[in-house]
Amino acid sequence: MMENFEFTHWFWFILTLVLLGLEMAVPGVIFMWLAIASVIVGGLVFVDAAISWEIQFIIFSILGIISVYAGRTYLRKNPIISDDENLNDRGARYVGKKYTLERALVNGKGKIRIGDSLWLVRGDFESDVGTSVKVTGSDGVVLLVEQV
Image (cartoon, rainbow, N blue to C red):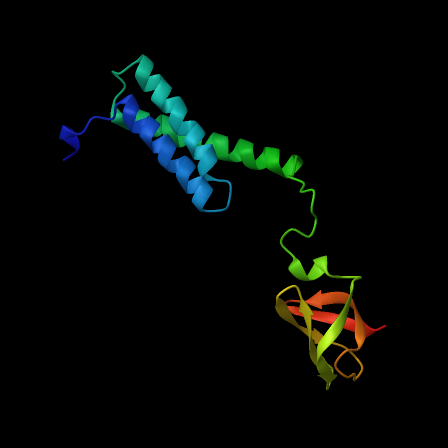
């Protein structure tokens, strides 16, 4: 089957597009570095089409290892810093804000409404509906509150 298939520069350029598509679909910042290796091999094959498929894969493997290592090293030294430090921590976004209890705090558990969602809250006190509480932290999807 392999004797009928040629690894031309088009193979490597299409592989580059597939790897970049995977990078967008799957988090992890790994496929981008392999795409760089793939486009380099595609460029080499474009310049010299006589490179055998075995050598192409060896070059791709070596460049892939080098680019992944270089990329990881670069990102370790220069981490991506977000303008919003609580981007993926919704509970932390509400710390310090005051809300009204939607459901009474009984046995240390109750609910508050934030926007169109009800959030579970936990506190060291008992309180009725309508009491104002302040969010002091979060424990997973449960907000920790204290009475205002």
